[in-house]
Length: 568
Image (cartoon, helix red, strand yellow):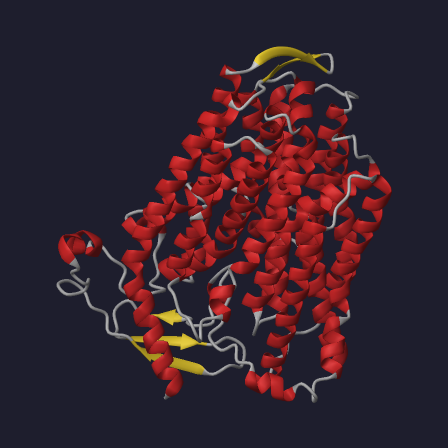
C-alpha cells in the first residue's frame, strides 16, 4: 500500500514536469522578430503564424479520440513528436539551413500548438485517474505550472546562449520530448486505484496545501532570481529544476509524520473546497442535478459523504429580483440554479453564455495576444534587451494568477462570493494595464502592465472550466468548454490583425539579416492598439459584471442550501 502511495505522488510530480515544460507557446515573442526577418514577412503575416499556433489548441478534441485507441503513454509521445517536428523544422528555417514556403511554416505552427493540447489531455487523465477523491486539487496544482514555462525556457536559453533567439525553438523541440522520457516510468507504473477513507482524503488535502506552498516559492524564485550572464543563469536554472524535483520528497515526509499531524488534519477543513477544472467528475459539490424536480443530489466523489440539497426553483414571475427598472432586463432568460445541463443547441441560445464568451474574448484571449506581441512591442519602444525579462514577468504572473484562482475555494468558509464575481474582479487589471502602457512608453510602465495582464489572464484561464461546469452543467462541460475556447483563435486573428495593421502602417522599410522586413520604431507603433485593446478589455469587464449580476442569485441560493445541509 505504501508503495502504491509513493507511485501515485510520483505521477503527480511527473504531470507537474509535463505542464511546466510544455507551455511552449508562451515564448513565441522571444523569437518572433527574428522569424519575421528570416521569412521576410509582414507583421500581419507574422500574426497569422501566432493564430495558427492558437488554432492548434482548438484541435484538442483529437487527443481524446486518440485515447480511445491508444495507451496514455503513446499519446504523450505523439504529442512530443508533434512538437519535435513542428518546432524542430522551424529551428532549421531560422538557421537558414532550409527554406520553406510560408504556408508550410503555418502548418508547423499549427502542429506545435496541437501538441500542447495533447500534453494537457495526458495530464488531465493522470490526475483524474490517480486522485479520484482530490482530483480538482491535483488539476489546479498541475495546470498552474503551465504558466511558468516561458520563465523556465528563458533561463534555459540564457544558460546556453544569451544572444541567440534561435535556441528557443531548439529547446521547444527537445525539452518536451526529454520530459516525456522522464515521465514515462511513473506513467507505466501507475498503481491500482483504491477507495480512501475520509481521514486519508483529508491527509491528501493537506499534502496539496504544502505542494501549493512550494509552488508559490517556485514562482517567486523564477520571478526575482534571474541573470543575463550565462554562467549565473545555469546555476539559477539548476535551482529551478531542484524546486521541481523537490515535491518527490514532500509526500514521504508528510506520510512519515502522519500521527503527529493528526490534529492538524482534524482542524483544517477543506470540505466544499474544489478546483473545478475539467469535467463532471471534478465537481465535488454536485454530480446529479435535476432540471424538473426541486431536489438536487450532491455527491462527493471518492468515499466522501453524499449530501442532498433542497433547492426551490423559481420560474417566471418573481424568479428574478426586481431591483428598479432594470429588473426585468436582468431577469430575462436568467439561470436559476447551478449545474443545469446545457446541450450545445441550448447553450448558444443562452444570454449568459454570450456574456461569458465576451468576457473571456475581451479578457484572457486579449492577454494571450499581448504576450504573442511582446517581442515587437519591446523592439518598437527601444527595449529589445528587455524582451526576455518581459516574457519572464508575464509567465510568472500568469502562474500566480492561476494559483490565485484557487483562493476563492480556500476562503469559502469565511468569505463566499460567486465565482462569476471573482471573474469580474480578475478582469479589472487588464484595461488598467493597457491604458498604463499607452500613457507611458517607459520601462517601468511596460513591466507593470505586462505583470498585470499576466496575472489577469492566468486567473481567467484557470477558472474558466470551473465556471463553465457550474453554469452550464458538469456532464456537458467537455463540449461546452470547447465551444467557449473557440474565442482564442478568433481573438488571436482579430486582435493580432488589428495590431499588425497599425504596426505595418507605421513601419519603415529596412534590411535585416539580408532579408527585407518592415520594422516600426516608436510609441506610435502600438499606441492605437493599446487604446483599442484597453477599450475592448473594458467591454469584457462590463460583460463579466452583467454575468455576475445575472448569476449571483443562483450562486447565493446554492451556497445557502449547501451550508444549511452541512449543519444538519
